[in-house]
Length: 485
Ligand code: LFR
Image (cartoon, rainbow, N blue to C red; front, side, top):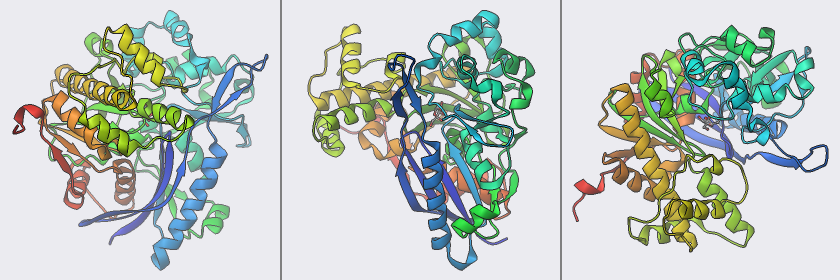
């Protein structure tokens, strides 16, 4: 068929957007039709009114997504929107009753309820054995641990179904309850070899197998939107397509790589750093280095490490805004003027994971590492960016070493590609060229998979990536050693 028009709902932990995408053999463009804030909402709701709980406002996200889809229908004009795809961050889920009603309010992966839970799971299946089954880097908030924490409350006793968040929105859009496989792979409940639910791991989580819906692969056309949704959005004849519903899986599809010799940094709230492989790497060294084998679109392996990402900077900015105003552009310009060789901290430290004031955590980490403590805001910003760049470089080297895949270039996609200082520091730290962009790689990956599923595009991921490369300008950063002085 000719070019297709598609709507991508792309929800990140700090912002969501609805994009209208047009794709064909020589065409790939995105139009932003809606952008809205997102963030976990904290309430103190323990028995004594003190325990902080972190929830996602899924109803607000649904309302914003539907409003965005209505705008998309309007902007698309008479030819309409062929399909819709939804991606969000990973691991978090909603519970539904037998009639499909929402039970409770989904928790954020940053909620402290998982503190100490992983240890309990590892007492029953040790970390190496778990790694052999699910291939995942140890993160305290992986769904399997969240479910063990969930089991301390009442909801699992009445829940009939668990849906990961993009699949929840997909259910509300189409009435179909499924688990898309790239995101299912992040739960810790899926077999790293097959991408399907692993009964032993489901049992370890303490849930009934019937709680989990059937797994479908990205590229599956799930069916038309529910009539009520189609009416409200004026999307007539539009179908829901399962895309790489884990945002990072869609981002990796959207990496404009020329051949397989590339590493990627998908940099937004998190920095996901790794390579794409055909087979998982499950060695003890890989486990020790904190490398995950998440499932990619077309059954590829996203062999990567989670780096804390722009979250650390976002929390510093929120803190400064609370004290008055804070201008990121000006802070970055001042940070750029500072000499290299300043303090670097280990951003992988779990101390940086919870929400709340961040500047003190950065300073304390410098102190603990015996490094000069940044005082001025610009010095804190520079420390965070130098630390991210160092962590990205370490993860690229680890990915290369552990997988045996040599790389010529590091593609930096996502919101971080806008941050020129971060891109330059990353090139310097990696000692390799960085190709920055597209900023909207995730939405592009979402649209590309829809376009291929509905016939506007054909080919392998390499062909989809070649299209991104032909249609999007990238910015190249050479590492310092090769730059002229
Ligand atoms: C990035 C991301 C990461 C995942 C983290 C938590 O947005 O999806 O890939 O590890 O969020 O879900």
